[in-house]
Length: 156
Image 1 (cartoon, helix red, strand yellow):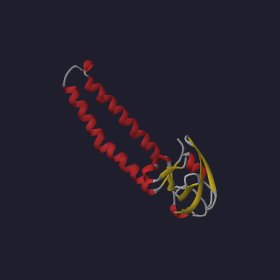
Image 2: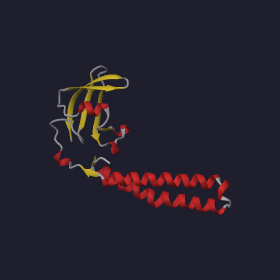
Image 3: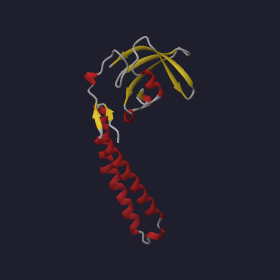
Image 4: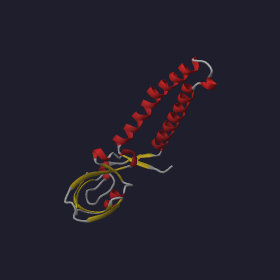
């Protein structure tokens, strides 16, 4: 698996998510399996089958998260510069067509959350912004067409 870069906050959230799945979800599903098993014939027990499938999915998710954690590298925010757009940059851009201003923070895929303005560096907009400086215009090809985004401000 590839190295995943993330902030310290994102790393801690990932650890918390794994703890939640292992200490709350895993026992809950085990209890469902035990309850379904107590109901008798397992060959015709849909509840048992559903609980076993949920257990398999949960274990797969825990394994994936642990793999991500094992390959995670915490980014040192003090090494990020506001000279050009890079991961962890906060960028204020203006859509040249609509005149609308937007704020984004470029983060790893695991930390992306569009509602919080956190864009994964793998998205078309983030890729177009990477390496640009204040005053540059980034051309981002998105499903709705091409966005021309003027970089107004870069901060950390």
